[in-house]
Length: 304
Figure 1 (tube, helix red, strand yellow):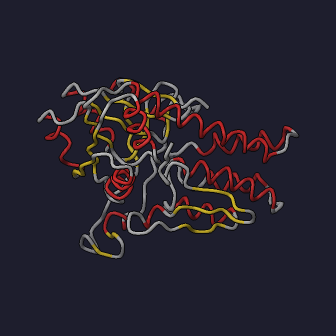
Figure 2: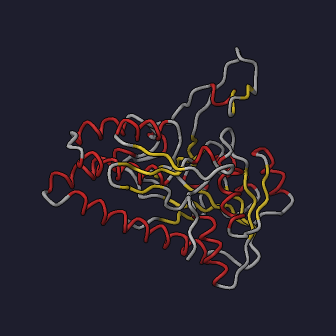
């Protein structure tokens, strides 16, 4: 089974953590080193890694911090303060619970990561089972290697699928990451701008939408990359099934309780050093939006 580099983009290598720098793709496949929890938190804030990479980084950061004999409560507080929309507290509370249990922490984390990897593979297999031969899938942002794996499982079942990928503004995770990893595995993919979705669906060019989720509330509401909500609304209007690859649910009752991260306004105005708008203009950048459960055809759950 061939996995995208984005499927498992981080590893612990003795005294440092090796991170695939997603901000450098697709131009360069570059790995950076993180040597302590402060650098790890900075990598999360700067979106050097995201999606499942953040989960891996949290786990490896605790392992590294334990080796460095750093107070794990302090590490948990720093991680929880990085990006508010993601359910980091679920992860940090789990690790702190393991640390108090008396069981070797590295053993607990290693077991969790092994289960996570297997669950992500099974989630892709479950999603592939919902596809039909000839399906054209629209996706938004990037789900850390899941789309090419879904396509590979579908192919093994005799089903050929292709993708439309939104650019995903302003960091272009769709065109930089998803399109790149699909093309690496010779899966047909076409890039569109974020504002072409309604027109594309009106032409009948897409028959399924598959996206990820950064946060799942107890009632089935999800938070995902900004723009997901409007795609769900349009998909409902055109009767196109809308599927979500979900993480385990948090303790929040509904999407109304999910805190939406507001990124710095310059991230909308500047890209790779190039000024895209008047320097003095105001900008507003919520990094996520909430899609209500009633717009979701099916949640494809991650069983960990």
